[in-house]
Length: 311
Ligand SMILES: C[S@@+](CC[C@H](N)C(=O)[O-])C[C@H]1O[C@@H](n2cnc3c(N)ncnc32)[C@H](O)[C@@H]1O
Image (cartoon, rainbow, N blue to C red):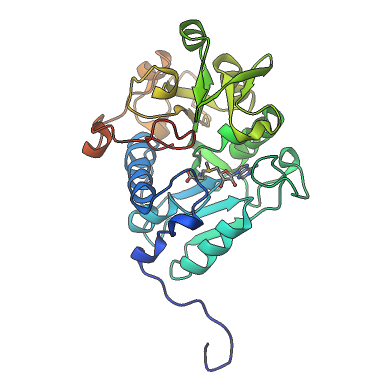
């Protein structure tokens, strides 16, 4: 309480940004997992793959308990900016209180419907206009959120992401992709001991009663949604959930770029350096490619649909 009698949130420190286990709803079960997965995601995916810089503006769609925001408080400079929104009020309220000491961190609650996270939500996610200006973010990401969204919702979120991204900005999502290889290799793809059941041509769920509990998209369809939103897929990686286990992460990932207006005759994208050859190959190689040591130990909960290795 200040002298003026106005309630002020108590100043919080970095160590206060870890919720108690009973407060977690982001797929992690322990404080250690919350910390480790969040830090690895930021180091590997946001800094390593999306080239997030300390002065950048970053949007965290479905920010949950602030798992990714916490390490970003140590990476973003005062000139940098973080915005996150979510449909679970408890998580946003908690973040409002804990992040009061970081004025460049903003969290927004949106009362949107989800048959898994917010069945009573008032508005449809596929009509939600992100409350941010055009071309205002360098990096937009969704960690284990597309795994809970239906196609019309995801398509709309991709278009909104494109709108709020700067030209040359990066979009990154973790999700479950049904590739032809995965479908051919196993008739029983599952997470959390629940088998994926096909409910539409391009969509599978682990719970037909409440599809948003966990969905998987046909890879070609997901690629087409990204392209239709105006983003260019730069890289797709496959996680261990389907047995691919190429990169040591649980979920699959999509990294996409919002094209910039290139000068006539140019094939490169100046925002990403001299990348024309790599873009033609369809695969954007990182400047460095070293998994943090903790990733290699492989201590992740593989049957956790939402996380495991960073997503
Ligand atoms: C598995 S949690 C992941 C949370 C966070 N992204 C992380 O990686 O720690 C999924 C999150 O997506 C949020 N979510 C689900 N549908 C959403 C929507 N339509 N818009 C925004 N967030 C949504 C949920 O409320 C939940 O916080």
